[in-house]
Image (cartoon, rainbow, N blue to C red; front, side, top):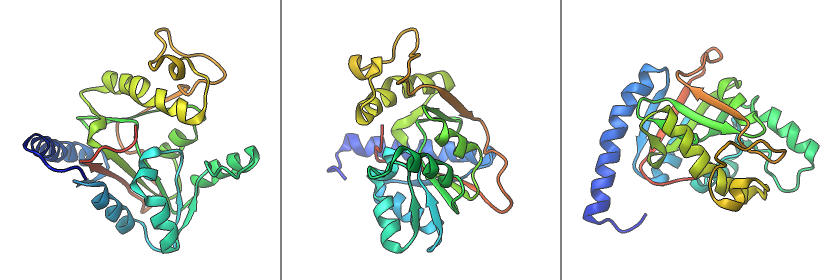
Length: 224
């Protein structure tokens, strides 16, 4: 973590206060909320929530990779399913997308979240947002506080302007935003588009019996 200054301390204190407010909203919407000041604390919480030996599905997410969760889970003996293994064929990648939803736990982030606890995500293939709506096990969202937006409209704008362009570059997609650095004014309708399915999660979807939806808010920037 960067060296703390009076300004950064004020930001962290504000994150803590905001997270406390948001946690009440998240609980009201059916989630189990936590606040972790650092990525290290967030990783510890993830490992606490996922039992040893459980299978873990991880759809495309930079946040979870930056957290170091994949390596930590594999090292502990958990079976991790993720479709972005570079050695996979297209068919294996598709099969992994379906399998991610059937694991004992789903570990993912969110492109944005409102102050009222609404999760906002935009997806290209749709597998990630589908799993957020319906997957077999517990769902664990890890969301950094820099993704907090005032409302749904600004959250959607954040995804398209801040998250999608770098993600398109990372994936080598030839979208307008990958070239211009910003979302196309009239939308992006093309074979390479990453903005195809929009999911606004106002409440935790009905969960399989005994399963929960967890949201871990993190006071350290992660992902896009």
